[in-house]
Length: 124
Image (cartoon, rainbow, N blue to C red; front, side):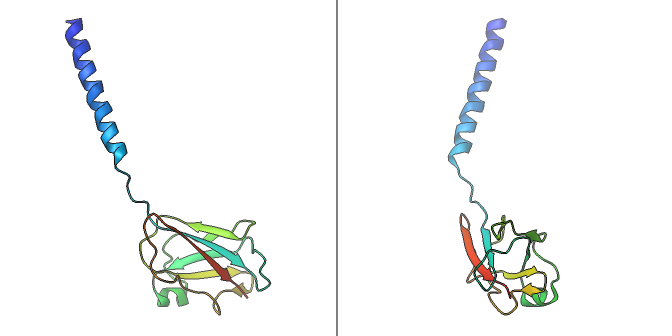
């Protein structure tokens, strides 16, 4: 009886091992990422600036319905958005009275899976 149980456990563990091996062979696509470097007009990084992404121009104008929660830039002036869709986004950055409404406001083209797009945005 012990030998029969031992054989069943061995078969079960072998099956699990095989399934884990097959699953690890398939690498799922990673959703697009957008890293934004926020600079002032002198080219210095802007820390603690707020950043948001919008799907449409109207939402961008109204600052309504960002695709994810607002993010804050780090001391290096960088902010990262992950798990995005493969589309183009409108970007809004604000720090005090400065924003990007007169500069870069949209990604050029759609984002792509397995890619981190890096974009520099100037605020004034």
